[in-house]
Length: 311
Ligand code: NCD
Image (cartoon, rainbow, N blue to C red):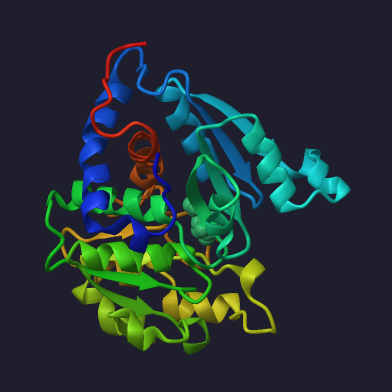
C-alpha cells in the first residue's frame, strides 16, 4: 500500500515503474472483455470535492477495469452540507474500509493531510494549484507515444498560459525534468509563478519567440476561478498573444505535437479546433487517462507482480 501524492515523492524510479505498466493496462483495455481480476476484493473510494469530468471518470473506469469495487462521495449530497468537517468525512469513509482514497480538493496540501487521517492509500487527483501527478504521468506517456521515443532527453516542451494557478504545470515540470526534457514556461508576467527561477526551466513572455523550437506545445486553461484580485487577462488580448491560431500552427516544427489537459476555453487558448488539428493529441491524453490510472492504482495497491488474468 503506497500513497501517490506528488511527483517529488513518487520519484523517477517509481514513475518509470508506473509508466512501464501502462502497455499491459492498454492491452487489457483492448480485450473483448476489457477487465482483469487484479484488484478484486479491493475498494477504491472517490472523494472529489472540486469539479472534475475526465479525472473522475477515468479513475472510475480504471478501478472497474481492475475489478475493484468503487465508492463515490459527492459533496453536494453528503453531510458536509450539514457542516461535517473534512476530517470527519475522511474518518467516516475510512471506517467503511476502502483500500484507496482518490482525493481532489481546491486547497493545496489536502491529500497529504488526508493521508494522516486514513489507513487507505491516498491518490492525489489534483490539489489546488499544487500538484496533479496522474495528469503528469498520462502526459509523459502520451508524449512518448506520440513522439515514438522512450527518452525525453533533448525534447523541448513549451507550457503556455496560466502557469501560476496550474497544478498540471507544476507536476508536469517536475516529471518532465526528471525524464530529461527541457521546459520553457510561456505566460504574461502576472501568470508566471513566483519563484520560477528555482524551477530549473526557462521562462518567456512571447509565444512567437519560442514556438518554432518546440517539440511539444502544451496549452493550459486560464483558470479564472483561481485568479483573484483582478489579475485575470482580457480574453481577446490573451488569445492574440498566447493563443494558438493558424499562423502559429504553420510555425510548428514538423513532428511537433499540441496538448491540452482540458477543459478548453474555446477561442482563448486556441482559435483552431483542437479536436481536428492533426498535431493535436488531446484525444490521446483523455484516452490514456484510463490505462495510466490503472497502472497508478495497481502500483499503489498491488505492485507490478499482480496477475492480468481475466476475472
Ligand atoms: C485540469 C485540472 O483540473 O487541474 N484538468 C484536468 O484534470 N484534466 C486543468 C484545468 O482545470 O484547467
